[in-house]
Length: 523
Image (tube, rainbow, N blue to C red; front, side):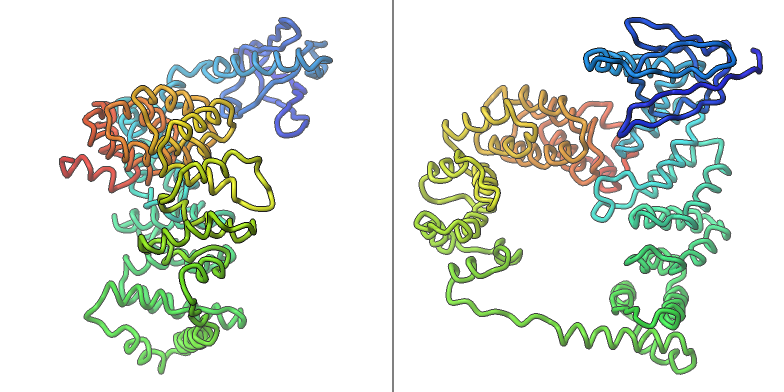
């Protein structure tokens, strides 16, 4: 293949219009064809295959010494056609000279979702170089909620173990641990991953954990890495943390530290009086002393500003005067008598703000009076100054009637946010509704919509045990990146005896360790 290369101007339409220059398109593959005003080309160099480029404009090949500039189409119709054609063409571009493109795409898609498919494909195809995807999964936590979901470190480490590019991946993890400054949950992910290397005897990775801890921390995340250090080195790790925080406080006098790391270590080591050990060592070490004094001041400040409990006359007084709504603790332990009292006051209440507070309760409990009252609130045009309409729709999930079901179906037929109405089927599901639920999932790719649908579908099939759950739940499984709700979906499929053999095999290597245990424990 000739080594000569040309420069091309490529006019892109993504979030905003911009110009880019590609300098590494080999001459033999830089052939452009104009079909209905749309540019397609048959080859890009390997370095460009990873770029997600949407070509929304026509092209004209000029003289060999000039740039190729993709000119904007004049009509919106032509532009839309160009975009559709470019999306159809892009996979072909990326597959050029890459026979393993489809498997690599499956690996990366599975990795982002956290399913075991990535591991199985990688294991069955040892010739595939998937190291770049493992690195992406190491440097970024793709979990939907990195704070709430279990660690994905073991999942990535398992994929790393299959790769023949271990040095490349390991170096990327070292660099990422030292450099991450944007996302707290990607940094916790990197610390946890580095810990697995350290537990295998990797001293450089162990040192990297210590070097990064509280060193140029992400704002509000100076604690990241403490659990890995404590797990690796116990009391000696705690002493390091205390000294490190002491030095940090010297440099940042306004910093404050509470005692939760000390309490965490105490819970893990009940036979050890952790505070007494630290107090004794503080007599000899200035930085441990500074740290403990800071913790004491923080604790005293917290006690001083601790909110005083408010006494309410009755449940109505509590609901109406809680800010903004009834507290988390109280909303989960109301008595039947209290629920009925709130419902009776809601029916009479005229003030919209107070009605909103009262109605909020019934997003957690079944409204005990006439269900038409709630339906009528849901049918009203939304008032964007209150959340009455939103709470009314949410309350319908506990109520059953033909009118409520029809209201939900009508809304699902036209809503761009189906998760706001699909939960109505929790109490109004009928045989055959699985088709509707499956079609809804297939319409969307947005991770937030998929996550909200997953939450609703779990509630629907918890309340309606049926083998019909298979198709909609599998459709969610193949799109969602939330390990918590994937665990629920797997459990429901097993309980209804409709889980596929493919999914059974994948579960053994899922990113959620609890999901793996479902199969191990014979559930």
